[in-house]
Image (cartoon, rainbow, N blue to C red; front, side, top):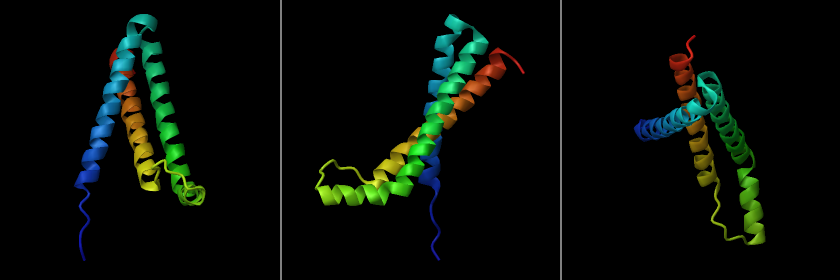
Length: 115
């Protein structure tokens, strides 16, 4: 049996969660001076979970309806370059960015507002 090397997947997940964490921290910091610590971290968390939810929902839709979309494109002769694998990867990236963003907002809330 051959073993599957999951290191590239782990590196990709770590990279996109890190990107999301940076975005979450930047958004919370940008809102901090405008609306205060609690509202800034709450808004950052809400935006992060919005991205996370959108990523999960669209990824699931791509998994469920991807073959149908590919068949429709083949039938209509579309040349958009869309494929199921690329769409799944794009929406998985959005999901991991949302995870990092929300986690960073939670950490910022703990640090700035407290428990």
